[in-house]
Amino acid sequence: MSRTAYPVLVIALGALGGPLFVSPAAAEEVQWRANYAAARREAQEKNRPLLVDFGTRDCFFCKKLDAITFRDPAVLSVVNQQYIPVKVDADAEPHLAQALRIQSYPTVILAAPDGRIIGTLEGYLEPAQFHHNLLLALKALPKTEVASRPAEPPATTVSAPAPSGLETSLIRWRHDYNAARAEAQEKAKPLALDFGTADCLHCKRLEASTFRDPSIVQLLNEHFIPLRIDADKDAQLVQFLRVQKFPTIILAAPDGRILGTFEGYLEAARLSEYLQRALVSVTNPEWMLRDYQAASKAIAHSDYARAIALLRSVTEDGMERPIQLKARQLLQDLEQQAAGRLARAKQLEDKGQSAEAMETLTDLMRVFAGTQAAAEAGQLLNTIAAKPEIKQQQRTRRARELLAQAKEDYRTQQFLCCLDRCEVLASSYGDLPEGLEGMQLASEIKNNPEWMRKACNDLSDRLCTLYLAQAETWLKKGQPQQAVACLERVIQGFPGTSQAEAAQVRLAQIQGQPTRQATFNNP
Image (cartoon, rainbow, N blue to C red):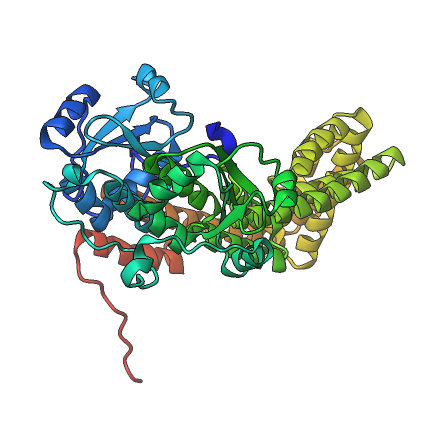
């Protein structure tokens, strides 16, 4: 069957660029081999399986896997002690990636000492799940290949206690389709349907070998709802699911979505690979759950832009995990809301209400940033703003806003601010009535000595504050001499002011001199 039957899980491996994640000390790292051919020979000589990590330099999730999963103590122990790990740069060795049919990055290939592939892990995996898969791959090897290796460390994942006796080697098959579907939904586990007939030779072969393999038994019993269908007795289901050959194994998500269909006999290693990939495609990583929950809270608080960014990160690898399906539905709902506002803006523009349309578009871009509608809103806003009449309207509106602010400054006797605004009105909008009115307002202030004195005092205070701030900036840059120069300007230029006193205290601190405190004598 085609490998594309499964959505590709993005896995984060090599930190090939700068460090993007917080990780343990560098001493605790995988003992990577750099040459694939040499690693193959070492695997054969030491009778240990090979772990081949394919990644690229610009692969974000490759770096995440390297920084998190490959730094986990349990993963480190298994990889370094029981595998021969080799890292392959797919950009530098495309022929090797093509030969092994690598379709996405990162991809980790697990191979027996003789080169036989026993597992393929695509996309980012959390440390516990990656560790679990490493142990399953070891169990899939013949006993002669694992006899010389140290005992396996205990798995870090939590699983149900293993049954005792004969039950440990048998798959706990269900036989009722509807009941199995209901159980899969209730337990949030995928379904594994095995279709066969009583006289099917390869069905019996599958049962006698692959379905007796310990790793397959463990995978199916612990992580799936295994369902056996007798095709002779349930022909209607066989026809409904378009099963044409026997045996056929169908893997389905808890919601019934088909993850993969596999016809004919499968070796245990191959089936284990398919089962693991199916399991990954329906397992929600913890970080996805956190981001989804954070996005839901953001939506409840009408913070749609943050919600969109979080939901995009959840869905970006293109897979169809349950949490990703929910995230895509939320994104679709937000896109529809944004599209509704875009349609409203277009209606306003068609009616000639350009100002209202531009206001609606600007709000849309802010509230629903990251949506397709927001991108279209930006293009439409630029188109409307480029019209000559719209430019003039915007200019007139800005002049009116400036004049209103200047008048408010005048009323509250903030004469320096008022003069600043009036200067802009005179220089940029002198051809408009607002510009002329601003010049008249400035003239009134300049003709009043008391008002000008207040404006000059405010300007002095502003300048002192800027010099003090600049001095602190120089100190942060490690240039105390520049800071001293700024402080001395305040002391010399504005003696007797509170800013000069503050500058004197700061200067003494910089020069290591004790500061003098004012003393007050009782009368």
